[in-house]
Length: 171
Ligand code: NI
Image 1: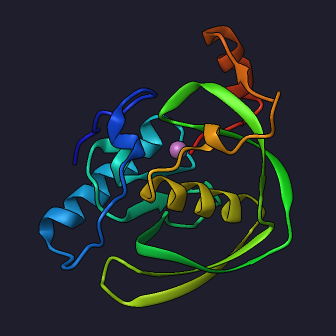
Image 2 (image 1 turned 90 degrees about the vertical axis):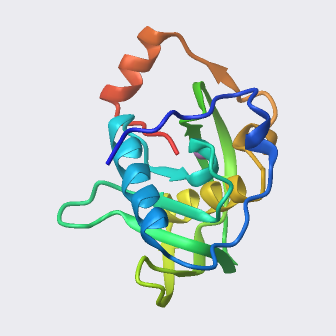
């Protein structure tokens, strides 16, 4: 297990489309463990493999709910969306930026889990937001491209501490 370096704003890899995972081998499993550790280390709600420089369709999400393991989605696809929510959003690859964005209120996602089994999960609210944000990463799309105009906030390190205490986490 290891903490991997998170690719930041301006890194061209963030605009690239990730490739499907064919075989879930030990290398993929190690990558998933590292992604979870890296997400936790930086207080993230989600992380896509491209953010650690690997162009594979893998995302991890953790809402830090008691007794719940992080979600691991391999080759995720959003197959249904319902409703709308206007939310605050941030991203571990854009550590100083936050903005308002419109996301679906509910999302049905199909993916493989770490064992290669097909799963379908319905996420609402923050989970729906995180699913959309991470699947966007796999398609080379970052949240700053989709924000509500005029809502982008660039924060200082001090503001960031305040935000942390308000429990605003990043994806
Ligand atoms: Ni992100």
